[in-house]
Every structure is written in C-alpha cells, then in structure tokens.
Length: 157
Ligand code: MN
Image 1: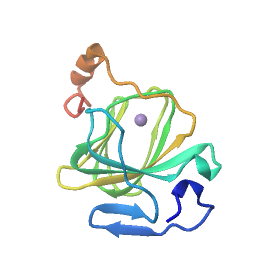
Image 2: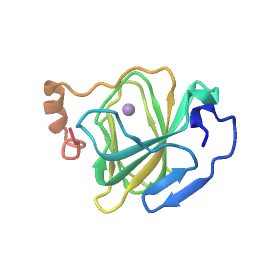
Image 3: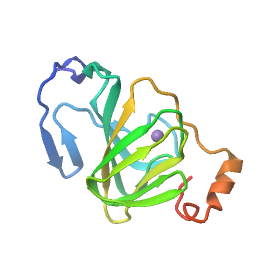
C-alpha cells in the first residue's frame, strides 16, 4: 500500500468501524506523541502538508469520558463536530456540542474538548501548517481556572 504522504489527490473512502471513524490509508495516530494531560483520544491527519494547502485537516476521536489537553497557542482552530456528544471549553465559555456544530478557537484562547461520559466525540479540526507549540496553564493560572464560576467545575487539567 502506498504511503499516504505520496498519494496524489485521490478518493479515500470513509469507513465507520467498531473502533470509530476511519478513512482508507489514513493512519490512526496517538493524539500527541507524549504527555499525560489528555485521555483516550486518537488523531488522523486527513489532509496534511502534502495537500498543497497552508492548512491541515485532522480528525480527532475522543472516547467516552476522554478529553483533549487544556491548552492555548497563537494559532487558531476551526472545528466541525462530526459525531457524538460532548463539551467544548473555549475561553470563559462552556458549550454542549453535537454533530455539525462549528467552533472557532481564537488565538491565545484556552480550550479543551471533552467527550460525554457515555458517548464518544469526533471532530474535524483545521489548523495552519506553520504553527506554534501549545502551552498549558502555569500553576497560578490553573488555580485561577479552577476557581472560574463557569468553566472551573469542568476543566480537566
Ligand atoms: Mn489546540
């Protein structure tokens, strides 16, 4: 099978499997190569730098009860929920999300995606190819975030 990175613009079929949404020849990856501040989440790069765009389109799937890293960075996210239910924390707001909802994460805005306790959450996320590394809250910021009246009870740090 050809490496996905060398494929020309061809059709890659969608496959709904027992393990989640997959696309032909697209490797299933760990959410991040290292770290402990997330739980039960996978990553698939549907369109990477080889697409010729200055953007990447990734698909993340969060198992029930799982969550992405609580982080912020200069680059922005454009997110489309594709399956399941869960919660998006963006800045000081908390959103219950469902399929086809759109979420924009502005620059330097704290964010986290959490699956419902009883249902997975799958979403597309578009980012710039050239982007900075995410940063996590300092201990002082974490303390403030935990005391926030809206998001405090829900943040997973
Ligand atoms: Mn992010």
